Image (cartoon, rainbow, N blue to C red; front, side):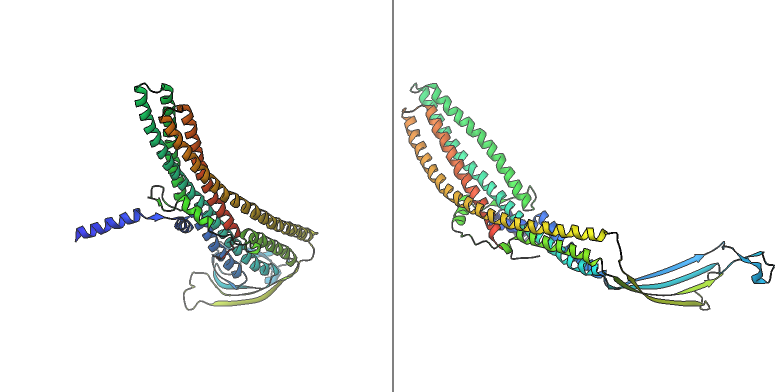
Length: 442
């Protein structure tokens, strides 16, 4: 039984470690574990609590108070002597009250009308909406960063595959050339040219390995994973490009674009600031109710049943009306109005920027779709040319220098093809995030 349990556990660990992530799974994992996105979600929760705090300021506020005083050296007051039958002009030293006293009371305050409170309620809702929109914006940034990190990792892996293939072929060519040179059929320069090619490929291989490790760590970081956690990617550049080619772009909905929504929300917040300055000119009305009991004595006997307690209660209303602020209020209102005009202009600029960005991104994606096709065809030609010239080199028809130039041309064609695919996936994602409307709010 212990062996079965151990075997099951090992199989489970192997399955978890061997689990592969496609691009969509990586995006969902990043949206769950990314720490920046988690902080943005916490900002929404804070905004909700802030709104509750704002609401609570307009509800009844109750406070309790209790005081104990022990005047072990009571203050003395001088009273004219005639008050006690004495001689006019003389004073008598007297003390008032008892040496000890206790009081307890309750105070209730209630806002009846305050224009700034009404604006504050609306502002708290705007603040919550700002936090929600910031979350969506952060979510889009995390998705874009995940796609870029994922594709960069695939790019580094594909480069490793090409370099390994090229290195294997170059090493085989070098071995054959050395044998031919030893037999005296070719010059030493041809061997040296191949040695340069092998050395360059070995250097490129070491660099590509480092870049692949760095790209993987960046992807782990974006997805909120530990840097030493196993990670295997199941998608391929060719597969992602094929998906992009078969995906139609949706039309732009300006009012549902997150950047435009944020700009519109900023306009509403500036409108509230102007409204706040206007409402400050309105009167405020508050009511209060206060009551309690007081006890006095020369000794601390307040817990005894014989202690006398004296009640007190008061109720009142406070009215405050702004009359004159030396034109300070007028200046603040004018500032708020100018800030509102600026916000409206900025919203129009954002709308134009989005339309321009849409046009630019559509053209970019179209160019990169064509570029993938062009570089793919160029790679096939470069491979065919390299294959033919390798045969010519073995037959002694071309020099090692010429072969090295043709191989370099092949390596450039390989990199151009991989970079074209990487750029297409990244640009297509940017366009998709620009066009797709906001469908969720936290």
